[in-house]
Image 1 (spheres, rainbow, N blue to C red):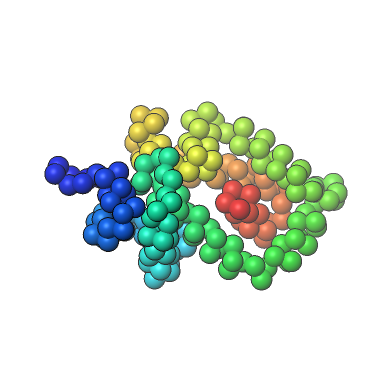
Image 2: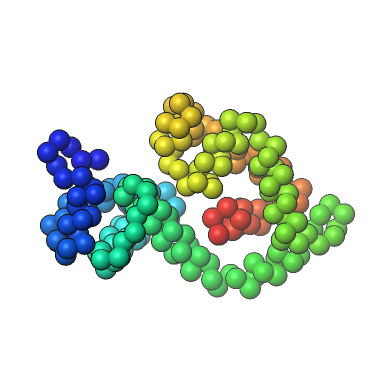
Length: 197
């Protein structure tokens, strides 16, 4: 957030579209730590988070003449960081694609019937809808609207700590609800694909 007498993000983006490198430098210094933190939460590697964060800003510079930001610049950066991090994680898992595909066809219900992917999605949707009201709202705002914990706290008028606790509770309840339908060894991978894929 810009301080008094500092240019706003909108002003800097306007300058950026005119090839102003100084504006790019200000935006970089203003938000680099924020982007790095958002990235690190997904990749859990500080060096990799730094590389991805730099790529996010490099992409902004490359697209400076055609940027179309409908949200705040900070929200745009967060989405860019998340998308680029998830793309990296998907690429990293490419070598397991065939294995995961085979595993998906082998998923079985307690009655030993094959559980198709669309059926699995139905079970996930049902499990989410069975979450306690506050827990469900926090989960949906985080996973589907990609809101930060602070944004969720502001929206719901609760503390960030409460948001964190509700997310932990939601994930615990979802794992317990889905356990009968998914082989325990595949649970975390399948959930990752469904929620972040």
